[in-house]
Amino acid sequence: MQTQPDSTAVRVALWRALHVEVDPQPHVLEDTIGLRLVDPDEGWRRRPDMDPQFTCTFRASIVARARFIEDLVLDQRPPQYVILGAGLDTFAQRRPDTASHMRVFEVDRAGAQEWKRRRLMELGFGVPDWLRFVAVDFEKDDLWQRLAAAGFDATRPAVISMAGVSMYLTRDAILDTLRKIASLAPGSTLAMTFMLPIEMNEPEMRPMIEAAARGARASGTPFISFFAPDEMLALAREAGFREARHVSGGDLSARYFAGRTDGLQSSKAEELLVARA
Image (cartoon, rainbow, N blue to C red; front, side, top):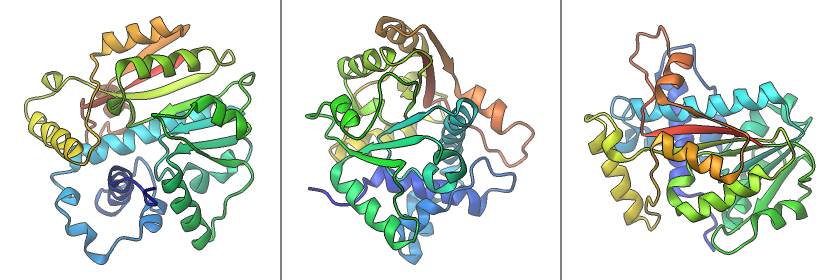
């Protein structure tokens, strides 16, 4: 069993910290806790995938999508918040004022969660009762049974976030997950990222996305699913959601990067579906 976070989760945590370190204020997301969890060697900033200029657009996209989902949670303040593929998410540690008034379910691999639990204890954050780690093998386990066993109440509304996950799943697996979320208590909301087909991206972004796809394939976690926005909206309607909308990279840039002079803009590589049960 792999007892450490995925390399993708580590990269996302470091990009979030890099945003605070190298980008001028105001910061879209203030998160250096992930960096503390990872505790990388001193040379991490010299990694090729941490080059401030090369990663500018990816870094902007990562912090914008995280901020958007958190804004959604803070606006709705649901009794339950489920983070699918939680990785090194730090909402519970950064926003305990809000998180402590709900149940937060972090869903990920057992080994990665054991590692994260240990690091949270070592850093003094602890794991309060309202934070539930739900160990799931997405290929084998019944997610909803595992959530129920951890205290999730399907009769109460929830916000479900699924960021950076759908590209690794088949269309059928995504549709099955969407159908289950659409059947949750009325008012439940899904915020899910999805990758656009590479040809729908700006020409200057395509080599970087292709390189990311090659890296994912080489690490044994290939990108499987890509969707045009209308295809994703149709999938949400097929799953049974009452409402569904597409939030583009341009929407995120207008919301979080308007008026900036540092060039930060969210890319179109990965966009958002927001759907309401």
